[in-house]
Length: 154
Image (cartoon, helix red, strand yellow):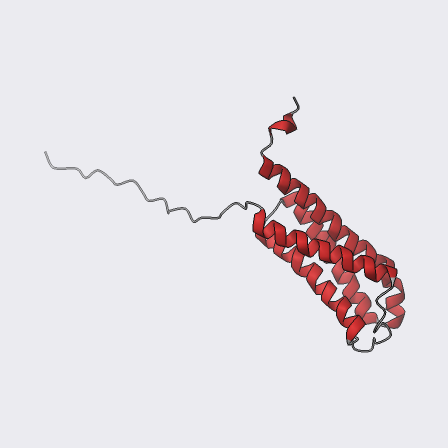
């Protein structure tokens, strides 16, 4: 029997969720890397938002893999994916400032991949926040000095 066979089920779920979350975040970064070059010429502020999203996604992927699960990490992961998805939807519906060329363009391949991966990361983050056991931080009672035995005069 391997050592892994003794892992509690919760630990396995946590590790799988963290790996899937990291892969999803790296997928988001890759999709935006493939699209960022053209954005610098079209709308530089969107290109810099892409760069910020890529950096944030890579950092969060590292946090999930190296530091482990925490409510803050999963909340940040889901929030990043949701913010990017909202930006995409806005770019296709109302348009963004100085960027209305993509309004109605719902069939672009990278856009569809982006929506799929971001929605999957949002769903995974929601599941992780609801289902994974997180270490509860409870405040420890303050250590008090031991009571000194008072000397009684003999």
